[in-house]
Length: 316
Image 1 (cartoon, rainbow, N blue to C red):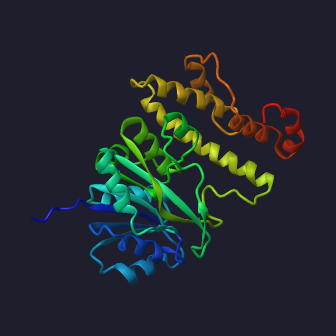
Image 2 (cartoon, rainbow, N blue to C red; image 1 turned 90 degrees about the horizontal axis):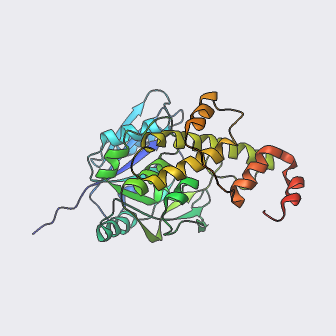
Image 3 (cartoon, rainbow, N blue to C red; image 1 turned 30 degrees about the vertical axis):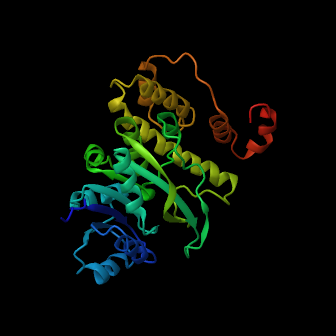
């Protein structure tokens, strides 16, 4: 008797990745798990990305293609890809990244074993030619609200999530720039999340990666941190819709990190943010860990950070 396998929907937001999109889609098609569909949304590419996918995949019944006439943003594209999908499980894919052939088998098996709504694995960093560099640091089984609020340790390109979680998070607010972080926060807060200690994808390092700050000058690092904190503010702001729910520990964590991050945003957020902060119940005590203190000092002292850092040698 044949057992029906659940369909997996790969969701790809494509923008100006003509050099890489063929490798990306082929890595979806070449999975050891074959009950798949690939939903690709071109977000108004100005290079040959759209013509490449039409030429190569328009007659492939496993590939669905949609295009926006003008660039709308990555989250718009992911929302549309989800609208096109018919799967029971979902995998985000960066248009310049490559899945290892067992990504779906490994993650789906773990999800079924653990009765989980999301599973994630590790990533292998590569150069532009996919030459392997190293495993990502910090991707492990330490799953907690406190940790995920600090930074996203779950890559969308190395995870798989089910229809229950997907229906909860989609459509994602288009103000959110890091959709995988939002999905991960909601998964840990509302659903069950599990980890597989094996790499399931290749992450290509290039100048356009959202979180690549190595080999930059201090000035660029500062600007990158400011950009990331603006992203964090949107995430925390969107979480306000669930602050009044019954998870008190989560609510206090969110308050704490909003207050800490507000130190960094005074120059470019609306006054209404501080009014909202004053209306929150007072948090009598919170501590700076090394990461927050160092980031705050960088933002405050800028290029003079290295000079002032020596005066904080007992805490940094």
